[in-house]
Image 1 (tube, rainbow, N blue to C red):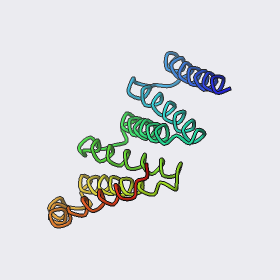
Image 2: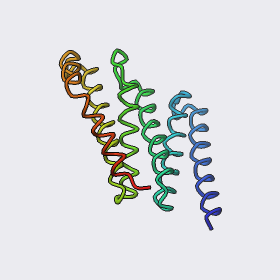
Image 3: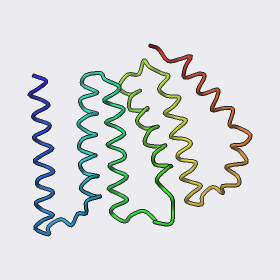
Length: 165
C-alpha cells in the first residue's frame, strides 16, 4: 500500500512538472530554470512533509519543510519581487531551518525541545532580515548581541536537557 502511495505522488509530481515545462515551451508560462527548480523543491518538500506527518517521521517533516520553504524563497526571488540590493539569503536560511524545527515540533508536540532551535533560529533570522532591510540598524543589533550572546548557550543547554532520546 505504501509503495502505491509513493508511485501515486511520484506520478502527480511528474504530471505537474511535465505540464509546467510544456506550458513554458508554448510560451503560456514564462519560467526560467530557477523558477522550475523552485516548483520542484516545493512539490518535493510538500510530498516529504506529507509523508512525514503520516508516518510520524520528524526527519521527513524537517527535510520536507527545508525543501518546501527554500523552494518558496527561490520562487519569490526568481519572480523579481526581492530587492537585489538587500541580502536575503542567510536570513532566509536561518528562518527556513527554524521553521523546519517548528514543523517537526508540530508533528511531535511531546518533543518540546524542538521549540528551542525553532524560536532561536527563526528569531535570529528575522533580526538579520530586519537589519538588512534597514528596519534595525546593525550597530544596535551588534551592541545588543555582544551583551546577550550567552543566552544562546543557555538555549543550547536547555535543548540538550529537554531533548528525549
